[in-house]
Amino acid sequence: MTFASLDGKTALVTGASRGIGRAIASELARAGASVVLGYRSGKDEADALAAELGGRAVQADVANAEDAARLVEEAGDLDILVNNAGLTRDGLLARMPDDDWRTVIETNLSSVFYTCRAVTRPMMKKRAGSIVNVSSIVGVHGNWGQTNYAASKAGIIGFTKSLARELGSRGVRANVVAPGYVKTQLTDVLPEEATQAMLQNTPLGRLGEPQDIAGAVRFLCSDEASFITGEVLLVDGGLGM
Image (cartoon, rainbow, N blue to C red):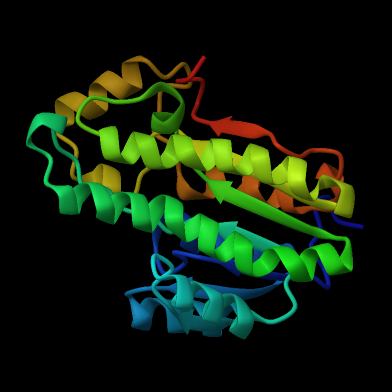
């Protein structure tokens, strides 16, 4: 037996064409899961990864309720749902356009509602399932210039805790992974001074790697985490202490 094995399970990962989502999809496949990669853009990357993992790639905009429901339906009989899709539109609140607020909330938070709503009844019927929603340390502590992003990621935490209470009696678990600052396209654009400031406040003294987040997600999806629900796991090198 392999620790945190996912043999025989089917998993859907949203935002899986690159970055943290790509690493999560790869890790779940490595654990033995059959993985469906949800993506909005990056078709070539998603198709190539799906072929590599022996999985499937399905295009959908999870910020759209109908698209999200279609994605879950096409994914099939799911044991695992990982909501990772997200984006940023940073800026000071006083100058933030309405569209930047709506886009971030719809993509980061409403998408979680749409996919979880679609998967809830089938998982409850099976009396089994694991949902992992990817938040952020920004959703726990806030961050300058990211009121929209912080609101969306904090919303994921409250949503997931409530969902865990609703589904627990049916054997379905819901948890949150909250990454710190991870090397992705979202952090590559940060000024060097901002990156150094983060590193100084991170006890482990480095940025995270997508694989660091993927390992935590794999554990929460596995039977070894069968008594964990409603939890927020910070994977941040100690930044959030």
